[in-house]
Image 1 (cartoon, rainbow, N blue to C red):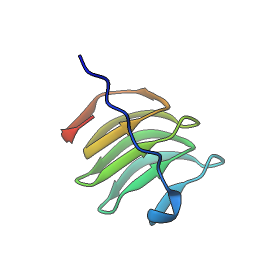
Image 2 (tube, one colour):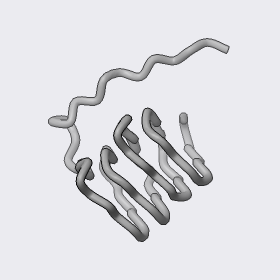
Image 3 (cartoon, rainbow, N blue to C red):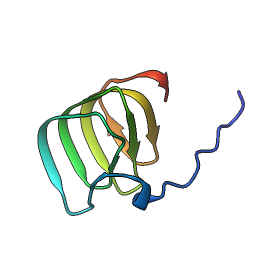
Amino acid sequence: MAELRVRTIDESELDTVLAEDIDFEGTIEFVEPLLVKGAVQGEIRSTSDLFIAESARVNADVQAGRVTVKGAVRGDVDAAERI
């Protein structure tokens, strides 16, 4: 299988970034791309792009258009286009 390299994420291009010091519990729903750098527990739902940074700790079921994972994810991940 060929390896796919993900481009570097430019935070200035994103409207929403959950910083490293954020510890969120619950359901996140969004329509614009989101970058998670902190901790999320619960559920993430979107039709847009989700970026999970190396520093992120996600313990959630994820549904999004495209999901890019560099950090730790526990849970079911479902992407409409690409993981």
